[in-house]
Amino acid sequence: MTDIQLYNTAKRAKEPFVPIDPTNVRMYVCGPTVYDRAHIGNARPVIVFDTLFRLLRHEYGAENVTYVRNFTDIDDKINARSTETGRPIRDITDETTRWYLEDMAAIGALEPSSMPRATEWIDQMVAMSAGLIEKGHAYVAEGHVLFRVRSYKDYGALSGRSVDDMIAGARVEVAPFKEDPMDFVIWKPSDAETPGWDSPWGRGRPGWHIECSAMAFELLGAEFDIHGGGNDLTFPHHENEIAQSRCMGHGFANVWMHNEMLQVEGKKMSKSLGNFFTVRNLLDQGVPGEVIRFVFLSTHYRKPMDWTAEKAREASKTLEKWREQVFRAEPSQIDSSALDALADDLNTPQVLTEMHRLSDAGETGALLSTGMLLGILDLERTSSLDKRAIGHLSLIANEARRERNFEVSDRIRDDLLRLGVRLSPPSGWSVFEVWGKEKSDLLRQLLLEEAALAPEELAEVD
Ligand code: AMP
Ligand code: ZN
Image (cartoon, rainbow, N blue to C red; front, side, top):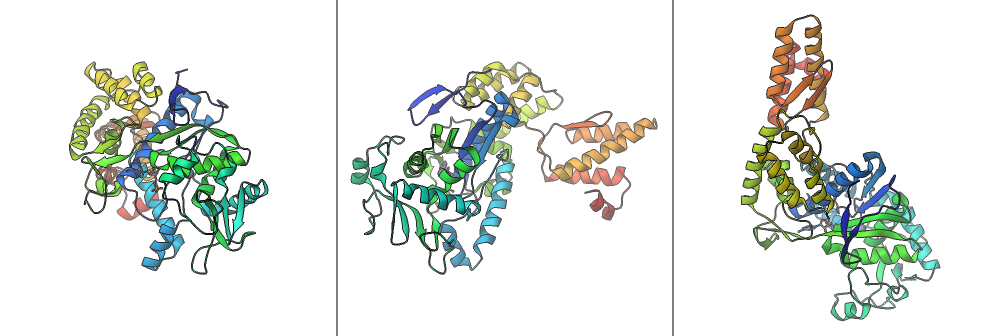
């Protein structure tokens, strides 16, 4: 077992990671608000916590790790987008959710075990809000449910501020119906044009924070191991999540992890500076998802990260070299120094340094398996459509071999090898290269030729 150490924001220290239950390691990460394409900064928590997810799966077994990442599909920005465009909210959130999953898959992120949409958990949010009122931690005022911050003595512990400091320096919303300016909204009323659900306090919608408290409880239980997100969420979002959950008597998360922010060419990304772009923009410009991932991994997650075109060029060169090296390699043991570095609070820059060493030493098997642990050189990123085409070709090659028609079976084997696919008779195959549209097209052409299919028949094979 590797000794995993994680930096816990709540303790301001790195500490050994000890799961509550090693057969059910549980992690919650705050997901996107779905009204637009994910920008390049949004990709940072996704890659960071995907890397942690991979490490935990490696250590505890894939079936023993549960990773929940929500979709915030109730939000005033979504409502505004709907008003602007005249499109129904559900259309916008469905489309954005689909985009998000496509874009995150392209940068090598595994799908979390569960991806709850806020709109599907309203009853549970209402129940938790009612519970907080009953316990005296929340109150109703003018159709709102508000959390009584002064009723929770540890408020501010995560971000390390006292309530009085926060009031002094904060931009808190002072509403006349609040008992205290720090009190935050758990539930708010909706007018006829705004999405709303029936509740004991009238038709309304949940505040953002209650969403994560309720969904984490339903899907991970009262106490779980890790809670993550960008460090812009520490206050107020995570502070408020903790207040709500603790006041319900839940232990909530043991380890709090936060990634630092991303900048672009040394400047804060903003639409007005013209340095704002999305993951999809990069992919469309031909920057492979794997290169994007590599650039992210080359900065430690607790350090500010700078996206630069130069870094992408460098990453691309390194990956090209490594891919060449691992093309014919069989995965072997993951390098132990690299694994130790990853387990040391996700020291991914050090893992990449170890990979350079493996590359220089010609240890291609270890290079491949270490890369696969990081989600790079991960050569199984073929689409299911491609996989079926490969499977079909593998059958044809098998059949030819059985009939001792080695000319055909060898030709298919070699053609596929050129595409980075290795057949391992009788019916296995593995993919040893990163795929893109170009290779998919070549594969389909190969299938057309070898199967002697007419193009319209190919659709049936798909
Ligand atoms: P949002 O959809 O705005 O709630 O953000 C989704 C996630 O992206 C949150 O975990 C944010 O902390 C994170 N995030 C937003 N901007 C950046 C940035 N520039 N760098 C790193 N993470 C970010
Ligand atoms: Zn959250």
